Length: 114
Image (cartoon, rainbow, N blue to C red):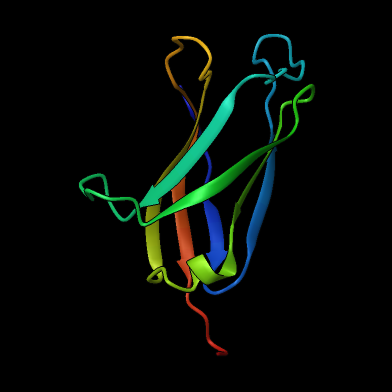
């Protein structure tokens, strides 16, 4: 089962967060070499299209460090409120089902100063 994590994005600003993947049984960092990470957010489960795609970059394969980001120009176009999101990994080189790592709610906090 995926970990649940709430995130907050200030509307109109750059968003960046890092996560590290560890094996639940051994608490050892997972090597994610060869894996692709994707993420998107939607207003609801019934939304036919993603409101935005989060940029996921593996910043250290050996320690399982993944950076998740969203440019300020994209967050400026999001309506304030809550969005559902998840982060998935998959191996594009072999027939490997996607695994959901994280899921939760992203809150877009409205900008006051413009």
